[in-house]
Image (cartoon, rainbow, N blue to C red; front, top):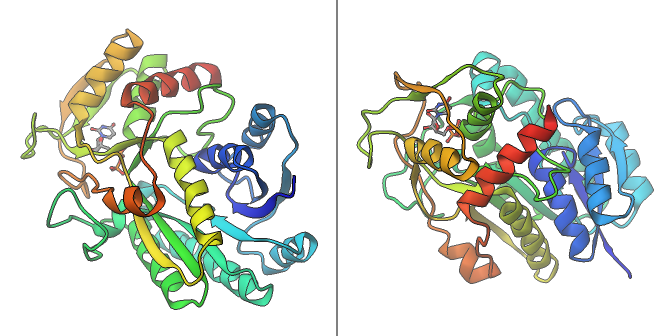
Length: 333
Ligand code: UDP
């Protein structure tokens, strides 16, 4: 089989590793660059076990022009790049904004330079619904303007989308809502060294006893039960959307677009905790706490554009996301 080469930066990470599997299963050859600063080689070996094939891996930092240049030279025919590699902690970005601006912007600039000089014309960019800030209308669609970024992390995603927009490269930015769950095999998952600050990983830590309890950040919002509302999307559905984006960009010329990647359904924090307990048949110790600064009251996606243009629809249930998240947590320890 003559597979097209897809360079995946950050392929040893959470969403990256799930995408490797889907790319391979759809007939592509993923090539990974990752500096393993906040990811794990276990995700590469796990992905290899799932696809029963070796994956080319380079331990390289995306901001290192020379090393990245070597990869482009050695691989010669790269058909498209999926750029996941970035720092991703909202909370850390508030404490160390310079680290985020320097790494997240510099790695993309390096990549664009190299893509231009090696004549690689297609990029799929890992973006986020944080680019919308607090949207005026819900569900939010891609016509909504970039709002005031709630964190330096969100600002780097806005700046990166703008950089890509200005380049001459064909591009698709995928704006993720809230990814949850793991591959059903539990062979790959979130291996970040960061202390988790996302809701489902925190619930999992309470379930495993790693944390005694957790807080719901605010129950006085204008929502169904007073807790914040988000759009939770299964990571396997998310990974499949990257393959569809690659198919689309390789079969068309002159593409510059962005798609929301969410299920389109708002779920409250309280509903997530209740469902987690029910699906996994356990009790989570939690209390009501104050609002967390920077939180948007509610956000969920209009995913009509990606439905219509790429034929992507989420198929994995929310419950299977919560079940696989817990399975991953149990095996991880
Ligand atoms: N959340 C919470 N307790 C926690 C962690 C998160 O109540 O320990 C809430 C958070 O305030 C937000 C929602 O869960 O309303 C989702 O937060 P997360 O950090 O997972 O994603 P975000 O949408 O902020 O990127």
